[in-house]
Every structure is written in structure tokens, then in C-alpha cells.
Image (cartoon, rainbow over all chains, first blue to last red; front, top):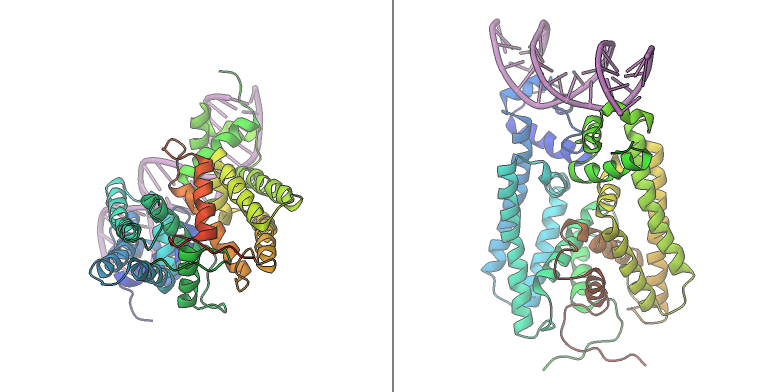
Length: 197
Length: 197
DNA sequence: CCTACCGATCGGTAGG
DNA sequence: CCTACCGATCGGTAGG
């Protein structure tokens, strides 16, 4: 085994913060995961808090990237929503530990960084609101929708998948995305929709 | 101030476990919340674990109660789903701290109690599956639905509301329930549905 | 319900 | 990256 670097330490933090929580993980736990002493981590990192900050920031930047992509994308609101759903799921699935740490441990960040993360996530959520709003205006979606409520509901649904969706199962990620998008646009009900003119 | 009892200690645990997490809350924190020493809690409770067990069990029993109600209820699948949505939300809203502790801290239970809680929650989720399944069979819902996937998605959406829904806002709980039920059955899309014969 | 205390563990530092 | 160590805090007990 070669020497560990900062990236290794952050990788261990993603895993253990996701599994045991930030407060349930000690620096010695992280060291054990890497085969070194807890105190040795301080040659790579200045504090335990910093590790959480790093994991949350890398997740936030992924979400930001998706938002930027959708903002410059052409297509209907339905297509943009589909891309948001698929892209969001992809981020959750590509690194589930990073995603779970982001979702569950964000509240344990130092105040300044927590506020920063909250602002970032609201900017991200704003993209959802814009897409839904556009769909309401051009009548792809019901025009009486509570836009920010719907954004909250959609994100709740997507983020909740981290609690039970496993790529090892029979359903792959893009199929899950299709199912979710269909549920969001058409619902569970069986009657086929009449096409709007 | 009169002497505190076991119920007071559990009440404090609901609040602090929800806000700071199980591992982020010390017995001294709980004592401070009640205006007594941390060590004094041990005249009401045998361990810190026991507090988490109690909070999780009381939440689980509420969900079980809702499941029992719906199982003996008459009506269409759509009506039963609506009752599950409203009832589930009511439980989350009536004691948000209890609900958040149940949802987020369940993984920190001692193994035996954790498995017990997982079984309980699956029994509860089974009620959702039964209602969806019935709706698929009688064509209220699309007959090709992946039933257990839909149950997971619906519960993800409902449980996610604990992260942002506040009763102090403009939207009351039953209106939220109506919005969610409408989203689940009919989706976002604007075209009116053709009635099934 | 309190004081006084236990051994274990915490995040982190010094010095190599 | 290690050993040795710091003061603070942890869950919990004894004895009143």
C-alpha cells in the first residue's frame, strides 16, 4: 500500500459519514478505514469539519452543473423536467455515499458553510421552479400549479430514492427515471389523457 | 417547576434527536433541556439507547394504527390512497420531531430493535402495496404499474415533506394532502383525463 | 434529583 | 506517517 493523500481521506469520509453520520464517525474511525492512525489524518486535513465541507461542496457542485446544463438546453418543459429527473438521479446513484452525506449531514456543517450550501441548493431548486413555471404558462402542465410546492415535492421524491434504490436490483437508473417522470406527468390513474390542442 | 418524569425525558429526546441527531445529543444536553443534570436522567431511563427505542416505537405504532384503519376501510383504491396520504401527513405534522427522529435516526438503534423497526415499517408499506395493487386490478390505476416501486416513491415523497413543510406557512396539512394526492393520481400534465368506462 | 466520580473516547497538537 | 499526549466530553454508576 502506498501513502494516502487528501483525496483518499475525503473518500473515506464520504463512506463513513454516509453510513454512521458525521457525529457517529470519529477521526480514528476514518484512520482505521485507511489503515493509518486518526492523528495522521491531520497531515492531509486541518479539521474534521473540513472533511464534511468538502464532501458537501463536491455534491453541490454536481447539482449546480446539472442546473447549468438545463438552463441552456432547448426543448419543452416536459423534456427539461425529464432531464432534471434523470440527471438528479444519476448524481445520486453515481456516488450514493456523497449524496447521502450531502442530504443528511448538511445540517452539521459550520454555520457559514451551512448557509452557503442552503443558498446553493435553493439556486438549484430555482431551476426546477423555472421549468415548472414555463410548463404552466404554455399549458404543458396544469396552469393552477403551486410551482414552488411542486418543486419541493419532486425533489423530495427524488432524494428519497437514496433510502431504498440500489443499482444491484432489477431496475436500472434510467428506467427508474422514466417511471418517475411518467408518475410526475401523468400520475397513477389509468384513463388516457386527451391531447391538448 | 415540578419533578420531571419519564415522559418529559422522552419528549426532550424527540426534540434534540430530531435537531442534533442521536450521536450529536449527549445525556447532558437532554438534562439541560429539562433543567437537571445529565446523570439524573438515569432515574427515569436505563440507557440513552432506550430513549431512541421509545421514540421510534411510538412513531411506528402511529403508522401501524393508520394501516389498520385503512385495511378495514371500505371504498375505492383512490379513496384509500387518499386516506393513506392524509393520515401519513397528519402523523408527520402532529409531531415533526418524533417523525424526523424515526426517519433519520432509526439506523442508530441497537441491532435487534432496528430490525424490529424495519419489519414494522415494511408491514406498513405493505398496506400501500395492497391499495395500489387493488387499484391496478380494477383499472383505477394503470395496470402495468410496478407496485412496490410506486409504494417506495409515494413514501419517499411523503417522508420528504418533513424537510421543508411547516404548518406555520400558508398551506395547511389537508390542502398539502390534496395537492399530493392529485399529483399522484393525475400528475402535472394539463390535459384532462378521459373517464374510464 | 444531586455531587462526585469512573474508564473510555473525542478532536486535535507536538515533535519527530 | 508515527508515538505520546492534551483537556474536554462521553455514557454511565455509587451513594446519598
